[in-house]
Amino acid sequence: MSKVQTGLRYSAEHEWIDGGTPATIGISEVAADALGEIVYVDLPEVGASIAVGQVVGEVESTKSVSELFSPVAGEVVAVNEAAVGDPALINSDPYGEGWLFRVAVSEEGPLLSAEQYAADNGAEI
Amino acid sequence: MTDPKRTALHEEHTALGASFTDFGGWDMPLKYGSELAEHRAVREAAGLFDLSHMGEVWVSGPDAAAFLNTALVGNLAAVAVGRAKYSLICDAGGGIVDDLIVYRITDTRYLVVPNAGNAETVAGLLAERAEGFHAEVSNASAETSLVAVQGPAAERILLDLLDERQHEAVTGLRYYAWAAASIGGSGSATASGPDTGSMPDRGSGADTGSGIAAGAPIDVLLARTGYTGEDGFELFVPNDRAAELWRLLLAAGAPHGLIPAGLASRDSLRLEAGMPLYGNELSREVTPFEAGLGPVVSFAKEERFAGRDALEARREAGPGMRLVGLRGSGRRAGRAGYSVLSGGEVVGRITSGQPSPTLGYPVALAYVSPEHAEIGTRLEVDLRGRPEPFEVVPLPFYRRPATG
Image 1: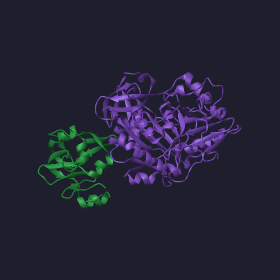
Image 2: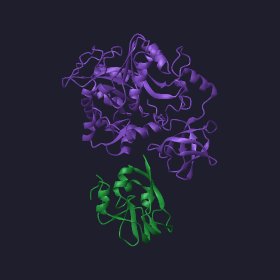
Image 3: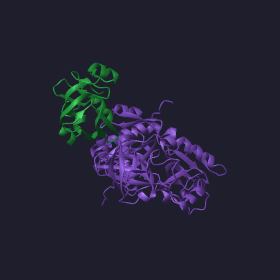
Image 4: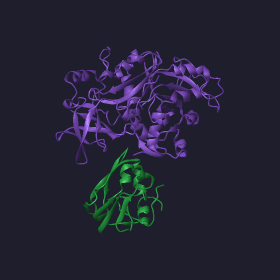
């Protein structure tokens, strides 16, 4: 069963965000498992201004494709080029090496605790 | 909605850790671990598939050949005993009701294999069309399991499981041909010739001892057919021997790199091989001509087969759309339902599409208007609002390397 990592908060659209400054954002293991093996990821440009809920990229597996929504507003300050080059990192280590981008946050959207997100998605902590 | 049906191998899949998906009303394994690893195993070694959701319909009687020539678009009377043929069953308007494989078992006996979701429809339609013929249609789908071993190592795996007297029958078995075989047991089996057809029919009563006792050889109908673009075999077996056969194949295949493979890899493999899927490329909305299957229709046969008038008219008029292969030049894949564009105008629609695991670029099957169907035509696919370049390429996308 897919794992939900504690110490992170989650959006209903399956992004996670840590408490860092800037904040690091990725997709949950629930989302990565549902997509299957990820073969392509499209991320926002460094320097882009993004809004809460905005489509900022997409994650594509052999079987399906999923849009990436920003859980926060702010400026993109880094993207994970390693994950762009090797999207399998998102499957193998969604909360670590498979992170997606970092944002200098000006505003947060609605976020769930790890416990709430796990309960909503039938996943385990 | 009724609960999805389960194959006789469902417990085997659960024990192997499969994740499941509904397909044609059946709860089928989607993948066991990694769908990409399963895909690669079939291209490089072998994969083992449960295809028990497919239908098995027996057609028997002195008029079997003549009847099938009126019920299906192909010339089944011309198929030799021991061989198989890909065919279509069409409605009166020429629309495709299903695509199927027809095995000729004896002069007067055929095995018709329709798709999972269509098995009842096809069996019913055949029974209806058999009226007035000395031919009996019997739907054995519920009692029959089907497993497939696909991949370059498939033949070696089968040989490991068969006693030496049967080896020549397998090595000599051509593509789209079948033979009776006995797997496992103490080697007491006699490979019956392709004219007995004892397997897997449960109704003929003429079985050569379809042993229920454990340890007895498993009689199978062994066909060199498949849906992955690789060499491989499909094995028809009664439900009560299916789990045993599955385990024997897994064990014999493991040293050759065989792993169980689910529907996710089956779909990516068949797409690379450019094979149409019922419900995606094929439906009653299209005739064989749109689907590029015109040569499957035999106008040379004398029978007035179902759909003949409509298909003759369509042959004259030419298809309104054509099924083509598309190759993407970027990394983003087109998906079923996405629009195909030329100069901003919609000229077609994708029916299947995904990144090709073997080739490393996106591929898709699409219906496009005939003036955009030539090889080399540059088109775009509307990828969720952003047009991306795609090019019409020959099918199949992937062809297995010629063997020595």
